Length: 428
Image (tube, rainbow, N blue to C red; front, side, top):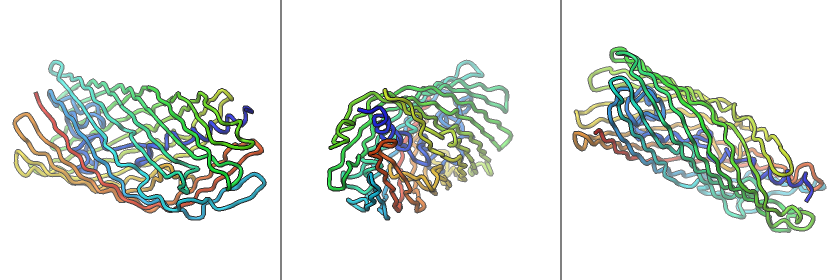
């Protein structure tokens, strides 16, 4: 097989690895049941193991605690074809045939969390947490109009965070974490043969890998006001695996292969600032902003035995904002609510059908009930309104060869999401 065709095939198969985890970019916020209830408006400024993902300083004053939570995520979405075309060698352009409407391509799922913390002496604390920040799956039918962009897309991650925190003085806490993150991905994409009368081929990528990052944070406690800030580093991911291509016919048959392949890309950094203000003994107001450095995800570097290629992505930095409140009905029951705006980092002119992302509003409500002196239960629910968006994604298969075939996918996206969360916290 010519090296140029080998590289073109592998590059097309690998181009969407990070995109499959999109949830406001490719990031799941569901890292705290308490956070769901107030739309992630106060996590960086709150205390306890439930806020470890948001701020490593959160455990400096929390005592010995353990937390476990689970978030059921349901997506009701529709992705509809609107004039998608495919151009074959020789310049012949025809509509992309097949099923014109994809119903609920984003699969429902469950995101788990776990955290534990313990004091070490009077001023220090250690913590350990497990999260699934990028955990996603989409499926389109074999005859879907989106098949040349995506068939099956799955990404599973596990983030292991080891944290140390220090109570510097009566009003200041500091913390730092080391994060080890495992990622496992599987992608399937249909490949066009050189005539619309021929069945499609298929490509599949499976790969995994471990990568390291870090987080730092602090909290200032001044009277009824707590201010929290944190910074989570970008993470350089390297996924090693294999690329399989099959079902190509005629002049393309020599490109059917099972070969090694890898892709490297950078996830965004995250800078978070938040405040909590106890307006009364019962009512606490929360506000939080988060700046996500999505511009770090500017390209994917693809490596195969045939060579290396850089694939431009052009994501844009975003800023999310949220406000919320906590209200203590009595010593055993606290209610909370909040609203958040979360813009997409995907540029309008390059949005993929693999996960059709869009700006969103999140409305949350929740409660914490003390079941005993040592055990409490968190409940949370959220409704996510996705603003209508457009798929606008071009792909050139077999680029740089006489067989170059270009798809131009255009579609309309609408939908909504629902989150149901439950968690338990124990002090001991």
